[in-house]
Length: 308
Ligand SMILES: [Zn+2]
Image 1 (spheres, protein in one colour):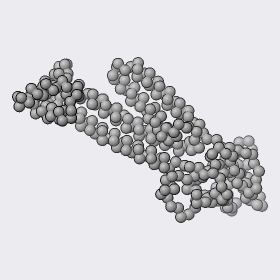
Image 2 (image 1 turned 90 degrees about the vertical axis):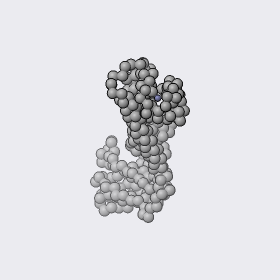
Image 3 (image 1 turned 120 degrees about the horizontal axis):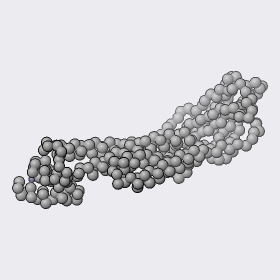
Image 4 (image 1 turned 180 degrees about the horizontal axis):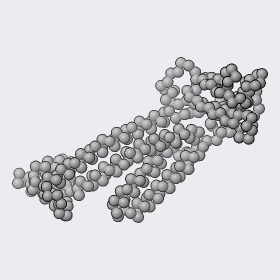
């Protein structure tokens, strides 16, 4: 035992700097647990300040408590990153791939006087439509339809029936258009007029309209990049004050997580035809990533505080 003590004491400076192999560290920790004298020596070399707690076992308890917390943090972090990865993959697989217009992709049917029924062909696995009044002429309204499929649906979903939906009219003529979402012109499929003899008229001439992708995500990205830049500057200014620096790092991790999530969802592009979906996907991913990064940040500081 005496012999072991002098070996351990020789190694303590290296151990406290975290410069020994895992085997050696395990040996030293094992010895420290059973040898009060060496433990005291270790505490003294590590912490020149007087130990406030007179209970001799307190530092050891504290050390093992910190190790336990670190272990829990590592498990939580791994879980969060696994979930983050799984959600990223799912979001990518279920991202809409908009279908260009083709004859028969959507056909219209009368639904009494109440409106029309949209019938999609088998290439469509999901769709959306929007009914809105003409901002300049409230006597007419529009219905814009978009249809898409996803990698997920192409791989896993087998549909027995084609999709259909009822679009309720607004007691005024409605122009029904297909939006291809590829920056080409919207295709006016028909005009529905509840009061006309021939309610659904397919040969309509309208203005040529292109539905352009939304750029909102770009503004959010610029905002996140600016926030991150500010946090980096604040970090440089406050880096000497540890307590403040830690909080600056914690805050700064969120814009960083947002930026990474943006690139996962939208790549280097920020024009999107599915703004709501993309935005919520980015928020979901960034929150998960932020959780993982916070835990990693905690673990980093816990590791440093062991040897303090
Ligand atoms: Zn000893």
